[in-house]
Image (cartoon, rainbow, N blue to C red; front, side, top):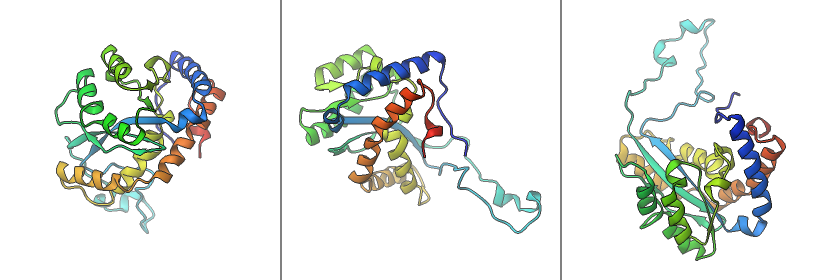
Amino acid sequence: MIREVQLLSDVDKKKRLRDCQRLKVRMTADKMAQTWFSYEKLFTVQTPTNTENDRIYAAVSNKRDVPPERLLKGRKHFCQSILVSVALSKHGKTSLVFVDRGAKVNSSYYCDYVLGGNGLLRDIRRLSGNHFIFQQDGAPAHRSRQTVAFLTANVPEFIEPENWPTNSPDLNSVDYCIWGALQQLVYRQKIRDLDHLKRALTSCWEQINQELMDKAIDQWMDRISLVIWAKGWHIEQHLN
């Protein structure tokens, strides 16, 4: 099966290698137990197409003999969607944070609404107190001076943008495990509209258990080691 991966330049590979080497030294077992991994994902009203699982079985000798309505799946030109942010750790998971429709997720919005207020940090502090490490990816709003200053003032420790591997969803436990599990639960039903999507996401998020999250987090250091072994290159082809 062909996997979609992030494009990596030579500069990206060198940074991934260097950052993973640093993280392997820095992130002890105790620190891993205190780390909160965060990520965002865009969910759509229309069920995503899975080219691996969406198969048609028909007793015909030629594909053209299959009725078109069985082979083709309609897709709206503009599909309603919503951006969702979460964080998880060995201590539990945050509530879903829904980004307001039409909102521009710049540094101010990210700090004030996604992290602050009723955002991710409220639940993280409730579950971990003031002893935790915060992780985020390298999105522009995350690595800005304003966000770095906000995190410096509001969290005990975080993985700095310059120390997080670039273009590396394969190193974020939310992305390489949890989003897929949530998506499978949500789209077992036909989603009617955005309100229905939000209710389904909230309900299905409650079904994501600690055992699954622990399993995802426990893979993290092995993936870090694998990137080092691969000299910063992709690791998906080496994973089951």
